[in-house]
Amino acid sequence: MPASIGDYALIGDCETAALVSREGSIDWLCWPNFASAACFAALLGDEQNGYWRVAPSDNAKCKRHYQDHTLILETSFDTEGGSARLVDFMPVRGKHSDVVRMLTGVRGQVAMRMDLVMRFDYGRAIPWVTDFEHGAARLISGPNLAILRSNVQLKFKNGDITSEFELKEGQTVFFVLTYGESCEPLPPRINHEKALNDTESFWKTWIRHQKLTSDYAEAMRRSLITLKALTYRPTGGIVAAPTTSLPEQIGGPRNWDYRYCWLRDATFTLLALMNAGFFDEARAWREWLLRAAAGSPDQLQIMYGIRGERHLLEWEVDWLTGYQNSTPVRVGNAASKQLQLDVYGEVADALLHAHLGGMKPQQEDLDLLRELTEHLCGIWQQPDSGIWEVRGGTRQFTYSKIMAWVALDRAIRNAELFHLQGPVQKWRQTREQIHKEVCEQGWNRELGSFTQYYGSKELDASLLLLPILGFLPPSDPRVSSTVDAIQKHLMRDGLLLRYDTTCGDGLPPGEGAFLACTFWLVTALSMLGRKAEATEKYEELLKLRNDVGLLAEEYDTKHRRQLGNFPQALSHIALVNSGLELMRHETSQHQRRNETGRQKPANGE
Image 1 (tube, rainbow, N blue to C red):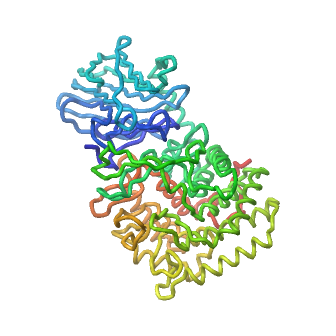
Image 2: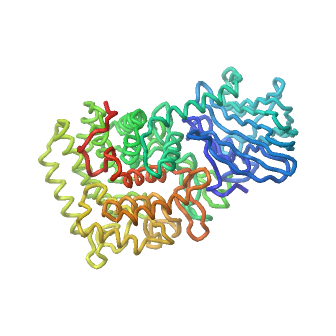
Image 3: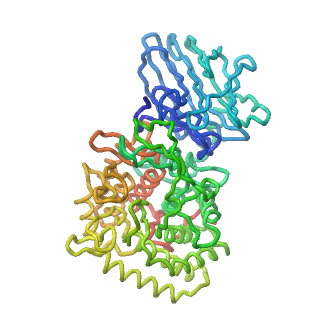
């Protein structure tokens, strides 16, 4: 049985990532990239679906941490006979991808065991395993090839590899697993010590670009490292999570594939990166966004593959039983074909902030923005599937209309500041029309709040973004009233639901509290001048991180456990941006989404 979702740690090489349990078991890894089929899939099934464990043979007490400012995981095992240290990492990729596991005897003598059960094709395909040189094994399944190298004896049985050995004080044992293609020459052996030094240097050099000074800087740095690990380095795309189908409710069907890049995250991501000092990553994300969104504006999707792929066909992996029997296990995401009007606002907002952040506008930026804006003018009145990608039919979602307003507003500002050519007067008229309609049809006098969709009495935590987006100023009484209503009706044990799933969204009701929404509450409270309340809530949220600082998408307040895909980029982005909002009185560098144009970061182009 896999570990609890929140019990995993992340290692990665900026093209894929693995999840490692407290007990030293890698239960999830997609090779060669984030969106590839998993070769260790015990996370969504059982041990027969693939895992790689390095741990003491006997019971041990485990404690772990990341080495300072890196993605190098260090796990300590204490047994009656002695103690050992396991270091897990993935070197930043060259031609091939490697997972390195290094054991060092710290005290006494520890009986250790290594079990490698590799199953390609999402835990189904048993590889052909051969011993091709001393201390090395070759595993082949169709196009996939893996090489395991070690300095201890390996044993083979039914396609699996084991090793049992006594680890003495001062002794070092290593295992290096390398991925390649079966039709190409075997990947060369790497020097694991040099790889460790290079990996440490990479992460520490990268994080030095940050410019965080608050009491929460360490938590924010860990979230930024996590975001970097979720970045597909060849293109700059950032996946929402490295996993698929981790449930939003144990035993429920709300299990989605998050190994793709959502346009919705664009602005939040850009602000988190730019305001923390990571301009290269912000530029790479902007370039990915432009490539992905390029084309006919009526074909804009809400999400794309890591290289900008459009076809994300959703299908079910029926041979996997799901995490704790939560089925179905899905690959692909049918929501990619939904109409979600808010993404037009996200693209326009992201491009404006990129330009204001010092990324000089390119003609293709402005041309794309003009075409998207013109297309939106013709479709903004249509019902859509909304920010939460509901599968119960389209509606006139209030947040979608607000983001349509954002799209027009940001296009107009680009025209005013960066000479975007277009029918600006028509855009201004449409912007005012949308604003008037939202204020009339999205507002419920009885509740004293904006609601999820026109004419409804349902609330939606996405409306906490009203002041952040600049749709209404924080001083507007409708903003504070909406914030209060959301807190009153959607709060569960101190955390916010996205919305009430019992009201019908096309799926059986039930899910955890949505962590990003509660971080949005922190930002909204801070903007309303309720700084003490915001700070208290932020510190409560930080306590929900696991022992190595990671967050999933949701949290089960009843059973006190993390839920959903893990680690979740949006949760960590929201952690950073809320932390930056709390720093607003301490630094002049912070730039909120509705304060476009007040200043440019000093490191911009």
